Length: 219
Image 1 (cartoon, rainbow, N blue to C red):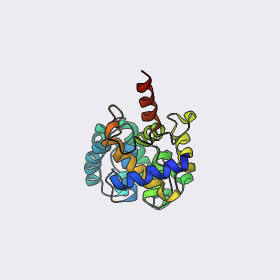
Image 2 (cartoon, rainbow, N blue to C red):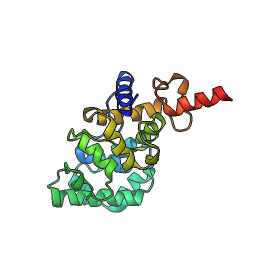
Image 3 (cartoon, one colour):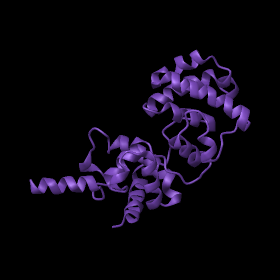
Image 4 (cartoon, rainbow, N blue to C red):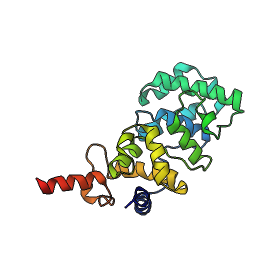
């Protein structure tokens, strides 16, 4: 089975088990942008609790841009790295208003100009807001892709390398949806600490699981 064939089978199976939904709550493009920024080294569940407070207190880009930085810091503190994240949110709000007319950009090049925005966040905006094919190489995507053998060994945990590798083996129309499903799957079965390989619907495709089974038989 080629990587492309395996990718198609992974897509097919996960479609049967998990929804194509983003786990971050957001009603506006800039809310998704900032929620994703807050999700760095933080759980989506906690981010959703924090953004509910943040966007209630500051319901517009204008209010975020003019907000007292210390107040933003206090609200986003539970997400960790709060001062850096608060600075990025305030400065990005100002930049969006001054340079983009309050509209979140629709290209990778322009998105990466925003404070604190990397490829992961940019790809999520491009896919979920603008409908472009994109690989959101978050921790779930990286871990699961490596386990399955959809990526090559040299990719390791490098988000950019994983993104480029998956683009070669996953159909463009399925890329964004697969990344959403990886998140659900990574929380439900293929967890980082204790994956439930015995009940995993992908265990027959998983390079790591098959290798472990082979070792167990030899032992």
